[in-house]
Length: 101
Image (tube, rainbow, N blue to C red; front, side, top):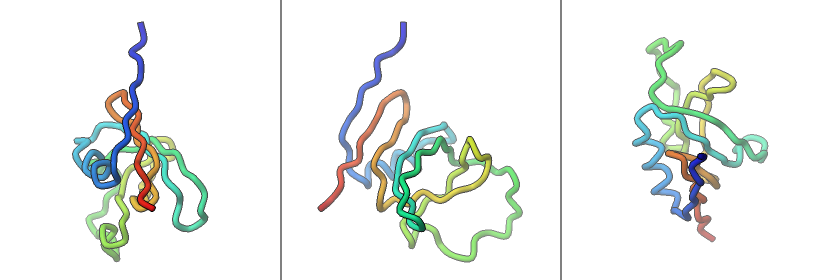
């Protein structure tokens, strides 16, 4: 028997905290890309060290409201724009992020 998904409405800060506290678990995220304005759906996770050189980034992603994640499908690092988060799928639940107007 399949577990029925539940969904909740959460604020952006709660979604960001949930992503940061995911402890390497895979999660789904939907957001609007800053560069093109396209909506992106991604399966991602934190804590991946594959191909890390130790050099680091030339900027601070947090200051630009970005979170660095590992895209599980493309198998590359990507940035999630936390300003435009709209949906988060985690722990078998679907969370919708309330947009502040």
